[in-house]
Amino acid sequence: MSAPSEPVRTLVNGHRQTSISAFDRGFTLADGLFETIAIRGGRPLLWEAHCGRLEQGCGALGLIAPERELLTQEIAQLRGGDTDGTVRITVTRGPGARGYALPAEPTPTRVVSFDSGGPFFGASPLRLRWCETRIGLQPRLAGIKHLGRLEQVLARAEWNDPHIDEGVVQSVDGRVIECVAANLFLVRENVLITPTLSDCGVAGVARGQVLATARTLDIETEERDVGPGEVNTADELFLTSSVRGIAPIGSLAQQSFAAPGPITAQLIEHSDWLR
Amino acid sequence: MSAPSEPVRTLVNGHRQTSISAFDRGFTLADGLFETIAIRGGRPLLWEAHCGRLEQGCGALGLIAPERELLTQEIAQLRGGDTDGTVRITVTRGPGARGYALPAEPTPTRVVSFDSGGPFFGASPLRLRWCETRIGLQPRLAGIKHLGRLEQVLARAEWNDPHIDEGVVQSVDGRVIECVAANLFLVRENVLITPTLSDCGVAGVARGQVLATARTLDIETEERDVGPGEVNTADELFLTSSVRGIAPIGSLAQQSFAAPGPITAQLIEHSDWLR
Image 1 (cartoon, rainbow over the protein chains, first blue to last red):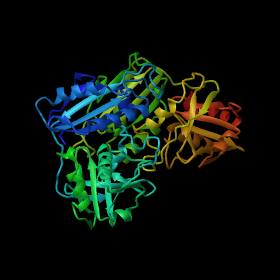
Image 2 (tube, rainbow over the protein chains, first blue to last red; image 1 turned 30 degrees about the vertical axis):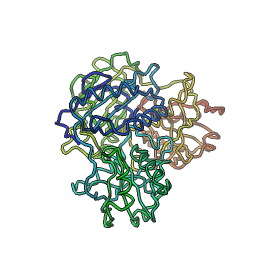
Image 3 (spheres, rainbow over the protein chains, first blue to last red; image 1 turned 45 degrees about the horizontal axis):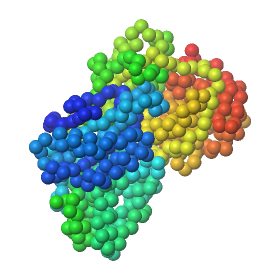
Image 4 (cartoon, helix red, strand yellow; image 1 turned 60 degrees about the vertical axis):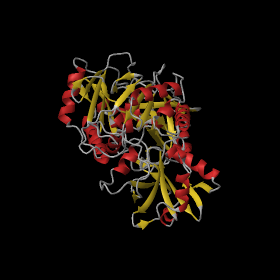
């Protein structure tokens, strides 16, 4: 991640600028969504899937999604000679008057930023903790990477220890959902399990890719409710994110795990997007 | 409400400007909160209560609340010769790098805006509808007027009919919680009832004021779970908001109500802040 003082290259609706309107509904109401995409060898990784999720999310919120071709051009323009880095695309309903009513003629805001940090693939086994902050239940927004991320902010604020890489968060009713900024997978008796995200959580693009890869490898997969006990006694644990790829988890609080375990290693080996 | 094209007077961290950083965590993560305050006769109404809620919310999110005196000065500066209007105060954790981790040294953003619309007190009986959009369950954020307001955006987007003034929203588990941009009260057998907000909803300043007023009038009050059936068969209904005051509800979908009913009228009569 880039420090705030590093230069970040940004386009707002196609213009080189780093400011937006204080009346943008993304700022005033979290009325929008975003994607975070790894760039490697000059290419946005899992591009089709990211665009698909962005368009699906825009559809769910009644926003007009930007054209893929336009985004491709803007990313190319921003990265310049850099072949690796991370892009964030934010789409909001644009400026609006006070209140919740939709503007009569919304003019969406599109922010595309590139920074040369990342992707962070192939790190050593991660150390995780349990978070106390729980994720609220809201099926209407579940899966969408919308701008309302205060729960993740509070969960991430629970620790300062630089040796802790991530935190596992549960829903308010005690199901294991995801990590603060990644999805969670466990392996139990050769079955690949990831929490269902029908009530809350972000349906990560890397998560979807890993599930697809597992099916091609004839690894049995389950998307279902997961309890903390199952996580603690899993044979293998790993997290997925567009920026961190498939990252084996070596420890979660007091529990240790083989990292990578055999199925995790198999999935990494067969994930071409990581190379 | 002011149309986006009308001039809006705004201070960002004390400076006359209408833009904020595209990296402000209020924009990127909804990492902040806000207050909406009615100005009448040159005075911010329910000022102590608004400041109290702002400070409480900042405490809950680990933000530093702005000084009351500073806010008072900025509001006076913005309203100029206008005696009536509406102020929005937004406080965020300020600019940050990509990711959820808190900035090492956060520089909070404070946006104060004034527009000459409102307050809208003493309107004729309101017409309400039921919203299909439900509010998620999240005790950690319940009551706080944080920036993550996508649920309200989706609920408000359910209707365009200008004759509909507001919508009643339920929680995902079917309890009646509030209106899109106001709190809801019902009267049943001379008891004043308003939904408990321990799992979701915004604890409105006007709501708190009405409960306090009711107690001084020896009106029995209940904050508890409320079902839709109780609302439909209430003797009186009204909503409260800082900008709309105490607003009698004449109809909710197919149900009609005396508006104002006797207890509603009594509460309005004894609410000095409305005059």
